[in-house]
Amino acid sequence: MAFAVTRGGRGRWRAERVEVLVTASRVEAGFRVRGGVEASVRAAGLDLSIVMGLAECFTAMDLPPTLSEGDLVRLVVDEERLNREFSRYGRVLAVDYRGVHGDRRAYWLPRPRRGDWFDPEGNSWERGPLRSPLPGAAVTARFDPARVHPTLHRLMPHNGVDYAAPEGTPVYAAAEGLVTWANESGTSGNLVRVRHAALGVESGYAHLSVIEEGLRPGQRVRLRQRVGLVGSTGRSTGPHLHFSVQRGGAFIDPLSMHGDRRSVPPALRGRFEADRADLDAALDRVAVEGVTLSPPTRGRSLAAPAPAPPPGFITPGPPRRDGGRRTDGAPRGLSPRAAAAAPLCLGEGLFCLRGLRDEEHFERTVGHLPGRGDRRGGRAAPRPSELRHLAAP
Image 1 (cartoon, rainbow, N blue to C red):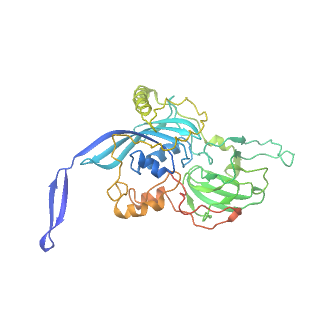
Image 2: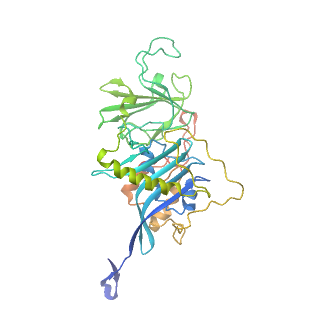
């Protein structure tokens, strides 16, 4: 039930009770990134606000906050409609990702206080308080107090973890915190340090080719906010990220902060197994580009990017959906003001829309966009049309 309020003669307001039909349903959909995420999501018949739920799941699975060309995503999500018109999405219940970072599947299991994302074996995807600053990157050198330095050839502790990545790869904050340093720092090259008061530690990101524009001491950063780009500044043998963690002024092993994965509580195991079977069946029957896929190999083996479709191939959307668009061409669920601003917030990776819920939600989710022309470290900063980052709300 709802009330429609109108203004009549002599400025008087009039309220009239109206009946509103509210329906909830479960939606199964999927898309492969072809020519940008925005077009791919729309072609699948999804409202663009779905990226909010995907962002939360991707963060839990320690995936980068962007999608690459050719990546494939399938999902099951609850949807609410008012008078048969799209209103909003509820909880994303399951996600299947296949792309350059491997094959991963996640299921949402609600719990009394908050739920968790679990893998097919019933182990939580979230490991601990610190996330990888380079999701999906390989560790090439571990924390080692007795290491022989590769260039100086003498005993010198390795006070962090090295991640291999090409120059220019985005580096993200491992947790929410306060920037304490963002400048050149001798052998560390371009260095960013972030204090995480809630965890009692400070993280460091060294050898960056570029420190993120506008990043300065005293500024707060969110989990997965970009802090710079991989480089080889300072004393370095090649492009990589040196990631360090200090507690009380002493270096500790950063990987010790990742923690152990939790298992589904025994009391919920039966429910999880039943839900997983239903969600697996739903994910497996989603057709993307006319093809349904078998469940991914359990684990994290890398998968080659999918081949491009033949010339003239048209990506079909699920026949049960209506495209999720308003008559004025903007996504449903957005006010005219938000719809007008939305194109400014879309990038080639995962993206957000200004005004999805309110301005505070936008600030917590998107942050700000970069400016043009910054060439610190010899590299051009991203253009304003590129998304800075995507964090879960």
